[in-house]
Image (cartoon, rainbow, N blue to C red; front, side, top):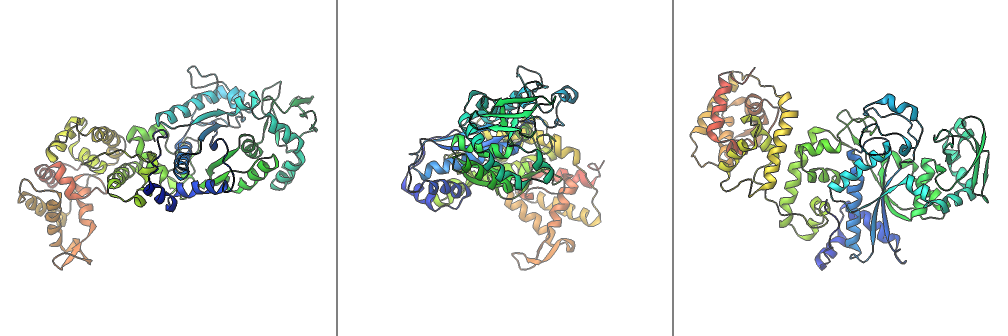
Length: 550
């Protein structure tokens, strides 16, 4: 995800952009229509929110990646004549309501419950002055790694510096209007104690959820009973008070003039509340995009505090950053599981889209994810071997070193070396790491039954009859010819080129189960060509001799 670059303003691009149905363009057009017949502001503001109650997760990154795509699409539609900014806003003044499961010392944090996150001590060590500062730094580190063009904003800093003071004073003036919006959304018990203002106790430092005894709009103060029962008056300005999270959304939009913000489906029912409070406070509600939530492998919503699902660093341990960008682009309104099994497919799909891009017309290019991921300038990368093939090559060869894999690759594709294909060289390291951690522990070889032994023996003979220079297509056809002669693997719902029955997928499933110890694999012909025909025949002999089954 490179930083914003020069926008291609050629007529073909502009015409394709105007007609594009890609979701970033659909969202960008909403912002264009927002200012139809009106002057654009000095800066069109795109915002994302982050709650630093836990370490950043991929869902947080997804908001920034997706918003960046919409921002780029907007720049294309407006021919880059309108200044834009992406503000990544951290709600780090929120009270720590529970201790995350993934901190090193939970007992260390217990005395600091309900304090603003930037007032909670840092349990992770290092030079960060608080829990909130540490988590903010982790977010910025990752966004910088991806090269996002953004400005970071801290709620603590904005509240304390007075950036919100004018709108907070307006909230005091329009307190009753805000309450009329909020109270019908609450239960009877909550209504009795609710206030849109949350004072920060000058004695304990905690964020207090207490009713207001008096709101003085003229003085800009609130009066309440502190934790010890003593009546206390605080100004709503200067960081002495923050707003409840629902009013806080609307307040921030009004104060900053936000034009676009996306959020997860769990916020959807509250969007009308955010909008109304923004309007009460003198602002115009931004354009919204509601995305579906990420789920872990068990179908549960991923959570910063639980630490379930994948972390940012975990994904990047096993795959390049672009694969994660693609996963964020695809089907944002559809709930998707986010766990380790999705990584290989995301890697190969990214390079597949990248390979197709140069051959496409502009209409198709602007619908290609890589155009949006790379701000309209996708790199030219040739990948002669897929990630799925690399994984199966590691599995078959038991390689623990990249040089072993390159021995197979260079023989299969003469002239292809780590120097000529550095992207492929990176993938070899990822493949070894992914195999060792996720594939190898689950490998289960099984012995072939009598029908399968005959099939494998025939396959070995067929491979031996092929010329030395046989390619993947020739190997695949040889395997199909073997399967067509075996009744178990005949699929009468399909037809072979000769008019007989086709081949059941069960044949190739058997090959991978017996030879590789996995349930599935890439196209057999491609795998055998890369691994080598003689190596594949040797692997078949080992399986028939019972040497693969432990």
